Image 1: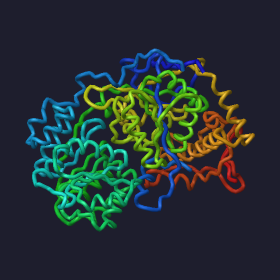
Image 2: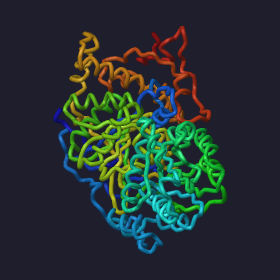
Image 3: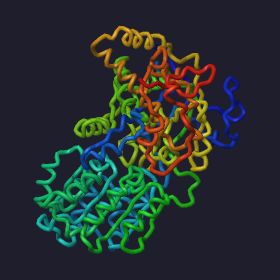
Image 4: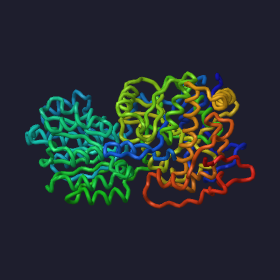
Length: 594
């Protein structure tokens, strides 16, 4: 376990000869400029997502929609890549406009100064003045641009200027798509309200509803909420006073719609008082669905403020992005070697399912690599504690699903590793937005792709995402496979009861979840489940041969697919007479029902 993995930038004149050329033009990706991942460098890793369960209550809706619904469905090289902790000037996030030029109260200015802010970012300079003037605003800015303060400062000033008191109930509601983003927004609002008398509250799925209701009854002037729990309180909490609502803020509107909260939002609008409250809608990506939702949200034509117009790329300047093409059976070995060599870094690794996060975190700990893990199946208290622990850590590895992909501001993340591919380029952008956040920040991103998935690069190019190719040296991949395979195979065959037995069961769940998550991809022309070599997939999870799992790909795809629109896809070939699905002559697939 002492061998290492080497990554090299592949330049145009040095194409790999041992691998078939991808179906991507020579100009499909950028290969110029500095090498972000040099020969002896490590990559970090996060795991994500698990079986998306049906929830019976409104408070549990938030959980089910946060994770990708695709479930059920070393030695170190020397560091040459820039650390995300380094800062450089000239990335254009900050302006020369100080907060002191805004007509803000002394109490708010004192809090801003103590938070360490002097000048505004572009989105703040463009959004705060019209919001202070009471205008409707639709804001668009890339992640890490400071949009949280862009809407919180006007919200706090509004409550302060009209002397809003607890007995008046709730004057400002901020809706966030995930619990973690709501918790983080609440923390920033708490700092901003430090010298004000107005009250602050948080209502999210997974927390104690009774305690929230009691707090609302006492009067919460500024409320941060997730859609499902907010709707629950609007309908069922008698002491919740919201008739005096003055300002409604919707953060990450595109994510709210992706998570199928649109119906909840319509119900929320029906419950709110029929008055002309001020509305602000913020998003990282503009879509037709967001534009249609904006028509429902705004009482009058909003002022559009954006900072991305005319940019040659949608990701920040300080982000070095690359991909490596790795056969399925080598994926975990490459990941292990990368993590082993980057133990001094702060890394996030994204997975497609909660079961995958759970299994890989258990496996890494078993082979002496400590890590954090966050996914949608954890209890809220556990998720919150892990989130703050990782935020405070100077180094560490976080395995997660897309629960952590949007809006969260985790300090000084060095690497974003997408071990399982995103559903689409927009999801890729949100994942890598967890690093290189803020003025002058730098970070690195690595995308794992199978040889059959390289067409995804065309879509990244079309979305203005520049990625370079990195190559790993197979000869230096650690020879872990035989050891890990033997270990798990003995467990499966002998049915040893105990910790190891449960690890083998976890591996089986992860295998099933990976296949179902893969089958739920909307881009079927790129991520086709029938192109997977299931024997190699099983090998990446330390199985000798694919375990038999109960799969129904047709129903699982529709059940766990994130998007509600119809997508193209072929038949899986599974029937009562053919329980293994469509097979080639040399195929070792194990799609089975039992």
